Length: 421
Image 1 (cartoon, rainbow, N blue to C red):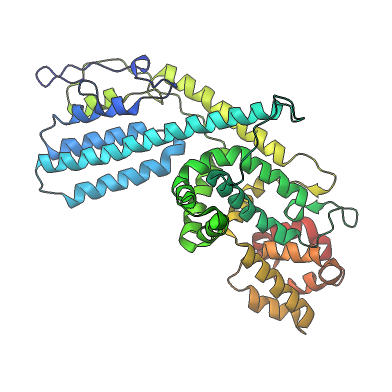
Image 2: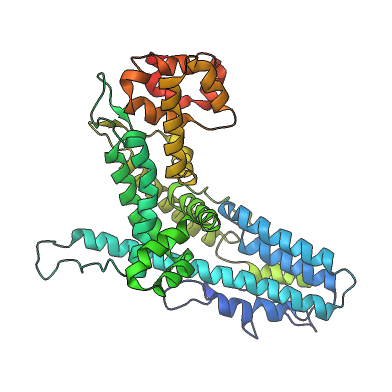
């Protein structure tokens, strides 16, 4: 790609990027090929500053989309630490460290490409399965093995998510109350809708990121496999890991990507410095050509349409419940951060305050300090409407809360139960 003698550059355009048989970029060749790879290209650098600059340029180019901001920031921070911690080291030492750094990026790109291929294949399969007959004919879907570790992981994961809604739905009359539909949060029908979306849209992304958990379950005797898997997934460290996976998946499934900015058209010219050479080499299909930009816009619009379609499934009209609004997306994502036990304890405590405290408002203020009680209040109010709603307990609990605080901390209470305040 770069000639040390002449400084000539063979610029790689979009059509020249090597592809795998399934159509994704062949990142192994992009990084490692002796003639055209990024790592061999920067290995001719003689100065540590140039090596760092080249690695920074590659990082910026490969993670140039707006949706890559968090990932790019993480790698940029790692590169900055590498540079600071190795001031004064020889170019050979820094080169070895930079190569390791770039191979981490390569592995990330390979994994992301594999995730996308797997996700697309499973989504296509799910769509095909929905069209197959289920009446016992030869076209019937293949029976799922409940003992398969991957299937078991999916069931335990979805069951854990569903338990949060079941805690809120417990004892709630699943029909309109006082002429108004119940909130989606206490609706079993909505819980089933969310389950269907998670299984079809989320799982193809979640499963590859949880292979180590699935592999560990496979080693457990079948008799205790599910119990062991539930125990592992209830561990605090595993819950934190799954929360990160859930947020990552939610972002990709439920949030629309931004359309890429139209690139500026620049005249071609001969580049002399190695930094600019690598930047030219790294110019790829993401943002640096008009053709690439047009393809990215089309891809982004397809993703946006898919997100809207999924959201429409969740928010379709129901005779029983009021569907979520656009502003409820963050709330739904954060449901995973709750635990069924924690919600259950909050509901129990609120009921105890209502039944046993002579000064309900004061007792609530003391208990509420530092806690997010909105979901628990919604749940307990619909589970015990005679006590909390017509019995004025909810009104008395929130009597001392200012209107501004209610709007900030209890927007759902104002939306659904304002008439009882």
